Length: 570
Image (cartoon, rainbow, N blue to C red; front, side, top):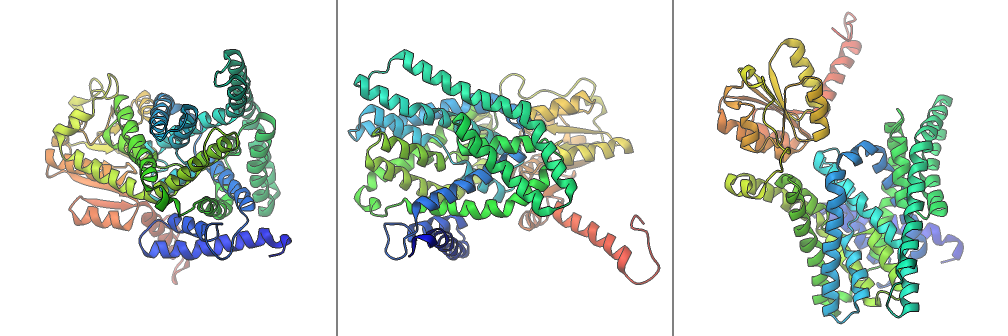
């Protein structure tokens, strides 16, 4: 293959095989990304036939990571990150420490030095934001409370990894020069400089970027050229990511994430996200292909026990630790299980860290191969982890004694009804979830004079609604103690506006046990969920996309059908 066509061959070969194997995986009811990984193995150096240029594939994959993290930043504002800081910051720190220690201990049993074991454990402790976001999007959880906590948790992990990536070269040189000891002064100086660079970048983005970037996008949008607007979005994402890396030593992914956050402040953020979506999807596929190219299948035969140990650390060790941490902070079982499933894989930052450590001779050659093997296997199994977590959540929810044992909310996590609310609760409505959908319903009930009480588990949303005088309860509505405070036995209607389908089912079940005659209206996001709710007698199921389509169709027919013209609002 001539050198000047290597880029074309890599893109074409990667995308064509990714499509073929992705389609095959979908037909086998497996996640398409499993097919993308297999495509990478097929074009990698360890299999016969066409071998793609890995250096080029890695750079193309980096573009995918940049665009994906840019999209995350658009949907994940600074307020969202601050809203979950109380669990994401300490939770991620403790989980990284636990996973690093577990990986270091296992590596030490293999005869590795402790410094290699610590780096190995760090590589296993960091989950892939790319994989998590794809899974959350597929399950409709990206905007849920659990989804925001999971994304915030992984953003903290990415920040920690950035710090490690900057510190590792200096630490390696210091270790080699000192024969294993690390002068405190050198380490403190390196840490201080790194933190200062990251802080300077973040300050620049929030002080300057939050005004300059929305201003730029609005000026380009006024020109009326869609191509220029799309180009401006890509220029912002790639320009800030590369510039942040060159000027502040921040990773491309982190720079792109903050670029998306400043775009979030513009009214054009949704259009920017839509314009970057096609390229994001295409290049994220190339990311998984590039990961597959690293995998040497022979390691499964040569070191099966080591591969199994790595997989157990990633899928069981990290998940169990995260489960205990989240419960320890007073969150519900469903949230703990969602976070556990989110962390049961490793990805892009692990590869970058392992490659750097191997080049610095801090990690043996087999260590990098084991990490890639564990990553591919854990990524392939991650959808099963989410499915298992959902089933386990339902199983625990059906056992109140076990649920009350595991869930021990801290003081203030779940509160009783506000004074004066209980007396008005008769023939009332109960709204579960007071976000955009629930608050709109509440406003309509208020105007109609219908008494209601809302239950919300997001603290920020709860405080804002209560400050406006809305009768609110804080906590998880699937817990009988919380739902009973809303007196479902005297209620006439239950409106479940939460986006979580499993929580919606559980809420209706708890309410029906307290009041079998209560009417229920449940928000759904899929035809399967709608059929399940209505088939089980759960009440009226409303799918937003279907209702939107029906409203638009009625509007279209009112204007276009033959006969006397009819006003659209008629």
